[in-house]
Amino acid sequence: MTDQATPLSRINRTAFLERLSPLFLLFPVLFLKSLALTISPVSAAEVAILKSADVAYYNQAVQAFRETQSSKTTITEYNLAGNLARGREIAMSLRAAPPGLVLAVGLKAALAAKLELVDTPVVFCLVLNPESQGLLAPNMTGILMRVPPAAQLTSIQTLAPRARRIGLLYDPGQTGALVTESERIARKLGLELIAMPVESSSDVPGALRRVLPTVDLFWLLQDQTVITEDSMEFIIQATLEAKVPMFGFSPTLVQQGALGALVVNAKDMGRQAGDLATAIIKGGSPSSHPPQNPTRPQLALNLNSAEYFGLIPSKETLRLATLLYGGPGAVAQQETMKDLIP
Image 1 (cartoon, rainbow, N blue to C red):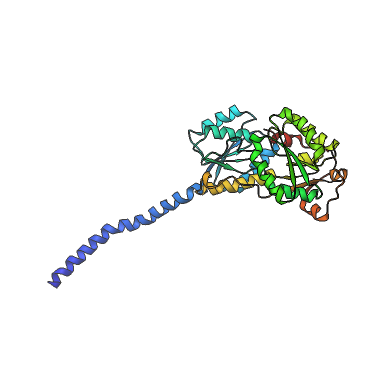
Image 2 (spheres, rainbow, N blue to C red):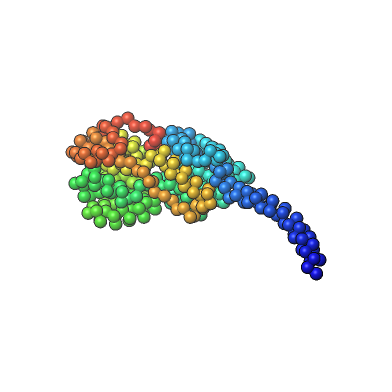
C-alpha cells in the first residue's frame, strides 16, 4: 500500500504546487500595486493655487510654498486679479476634476474656495481674521496672520518698558474675543488695556481722539473695521502728533512712523502653508490640522520714532529686532499696506 500511496501523493503535491505557483508570482505584483496606491497621493499630488492678485506680497508666499512641495507634485496657479467673481468661476471649474488640495492666498481667493469647493481640502494664508470671514469650514485650515496677543504684549513691554496703559480700538464683532483674551494676558503682565469699541470705520477718528490722551501707547489691532485705506494715514499722523507711540502689525506701519510691530513674513507664511499642505496630502485632513499661528514672527523697530518718543532701545532689543527702520514718515511699500486691507 505504501508503494501505491507514494506516486499518488507526489501527483497531488505537484498539482497543488502548479496551482499555487501563479499566486506566488502574483504576490509581488499585488504588493507593488498596494505600495503605489499608498505613496501616490504624496509623490504625485495635484495642487491648485488660487491667488487673490498678482502682487509681490502674494507672489513671495506662492514661491515659498512651491519650494516645499515634492518635485512630482503638479501645481497649477490661477490669478483672480482682485475679482471675487472671477475666483468663483475658477473654483467652480475645478470641481469637474478636483485637485488633491487648494492653496488660497489672500482673502478673495479664500472666499472663492469656501463658496465653491466645499469637498476639497483648502489651506489659506495671508488672510486677516479668517474667523470673522467664516473660513473655518470642515474642509479648510490655514496659517493665521495674527501673532498671539501674549507675544505682542511682551514685545510692547520690550520696546516701551514704561508704558502701562495700552489703548486700542476694536469692533466687537470682528475682534471682541481677541480683546477679551488680551485683557486677561495684560493683567498678568501688569498692564491695563483701554479698549474702545467702534461700530463702523466712521467712528475711528473720534474714538482715537478720545483714547490717545489717556494712554501711554496705542496698539493697532488687525481689525477690518478699524483698518481701512482712509483711516490708516489718519491713525499714524494722530499718534505722532499726540506723541503716543504706536505698536502695529506690519513693516509698512513701522516705516511710516509706528514705534514697532511684531510682523509676519510672506515667505515664512508660504513655507508654513506648504508644510501644512504636505501633512494633509500625506493622509491628514483639514479638520485634524487646526489653523496655525505664525511660527516665525519678526520684531520691527523704527529707530527715529523711538528717539522721537524719548525711548532708548537696549542692546538686547536691538539684537531682537530683525527689521530696523528710520524716520517717521519714511517712504513705504504702499502695495504691502494695500494688500493687508481686505
